[in-house]
Length: 75
Image (cartoon, rainbow, N blue to C red; front, side):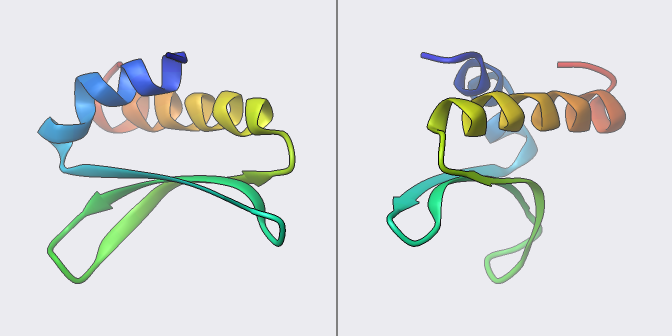
C-alpha cells in the first residue's frame, strides 16, 4: 500500500471524500480525489494524469497532503 492510500484511509470517510483511479490507452493513468458536497456535485481537490503510475501516485500524494495542511491543519 502506498502512502496516498494510507493518508486517504485516515481522512476519506470523515471528510466525505471519494477517490478514483483510472487507466486507459487514451488518458494513461489518472487519480482524482473529490470532496462531495451532495449526491450531484463535488469539488475536485486532486486530479493527476500521467503515463507513469508511480508518478501519478507520488504527485497525488503531495497534492492531497498539501490540501490537508491548508484545510485541516495537517495530515
